[in-house]
Length: 70
Image (cartoon, rainbow, N blue to C red; front, side, top):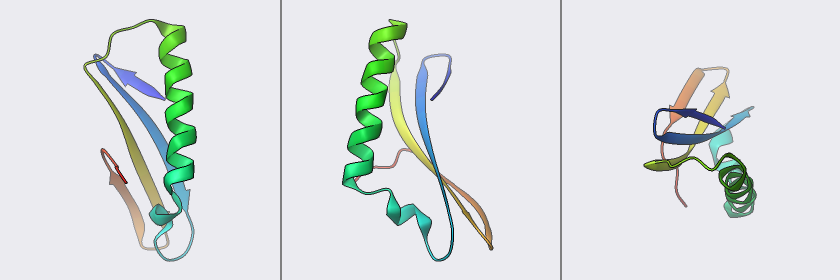
């Protein structure tokens, strides 16, 4: 997780053939959400925004998807 200012961002990086971003499914997002909740309880900081970004790495290049939702 990364935070800058008042924004907390969990970043999931996926690579491989096709569209790796589709491997960030509901189960994976739930696990990330749980990890973010644990982090938020430990750091006790106030964030104005919390989001999940996915970085997709393929032979064609790198794509950064911000604010991914199911």
